[in-house]
Image 1 (cartoon, rainbow, N blue to C red):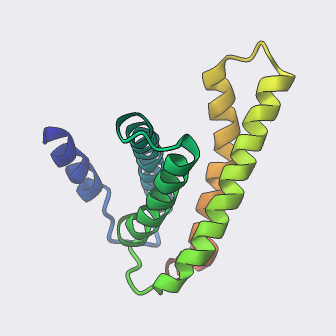
Image 2: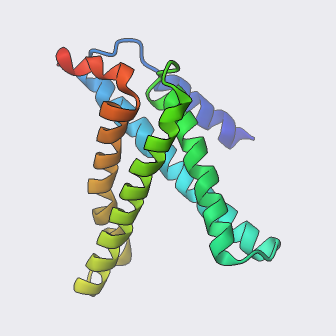
Length: 156
């Protein structure tokens, strides 16, 4: 229970009031990474749980956890990361499309790095492949999905 309380206090600490400060973008990106990483690991645990405990087919459990993770990620980013509650929920389709492109690119790049540079350690491979697609996902969310906060760029 203390883990959830500390995570909530971290999000409360990262809440900002002045959207025209450059450091706000960094804090917002850090929140984006924290939420995305947390959702990713929850998806992994949910996939393992559905597969091993309930005996579901791996593909079905993976797709269920992926869909649940992506939908919850939209609402968490909407209310916590970008703090724009007036964005319509129909933008969820665009968000899912951006995540599909991001995941496909990330997996494709990580496979290419792993097969092309066999001496490259696995974690370095995963970090190197996730960085450009995390930046792409953040940019797409900031500029196109959660538009009402993009007024920030006029003042920076």
